[in-house]
Length: 244
Image (cartoon, rainbow, N blue to C red; front, side, top):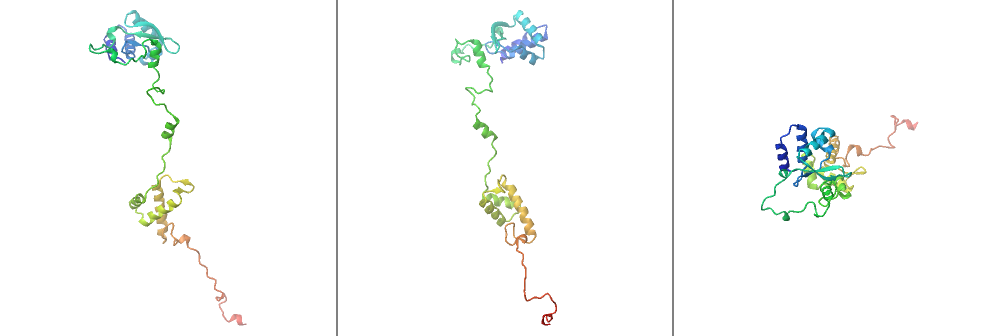
């Protein structure tokens, strides 16, 4: 986009607003050399006009010497016309500015201008010299799940203090999951804070029934049943009955 070309297009007096809108659209696609090559479909889309109306406006602009058909064609089918705006619409070069110090955007001066324009208008999303190509490693890093990191004892104690879990239960929690490789069932643990909260719920259930924790040997649910089998205690209430 050239600011000089846009300012020039807006200053032009025309009887047709459609023609002026097309001229402004061309100026919007103009490069510093005053050349532009948007397709008729593109101009129609941004100006909300039919392609027939756009073609009619382009013809009128060429006849009115607002733009010039360079005779060059662009695009895969070589059907897109390359227009050039008049010198007053182009950006002016400062007097103390040396063109030799500027990089040649079109590359080799002997290169076909059509090919040079096509190279400059390549899709910037495609991997190029100035863009790092997207590889499988990039996709894996972007889509990979967060790896679980086991907590330290200090972290468990701090979390236990915040949820009112005793220190001894925090140490039991740490020892238990260190021993089983930080697994919940057959699956690896994902969020240890949730596991600690679940540990506390079980501990409260057992401690509320008189137990000493979910892993304690004195838990009521884990106490072995005691049975008495005394042969000297008879079921008959009369101890002298057996004598007769």
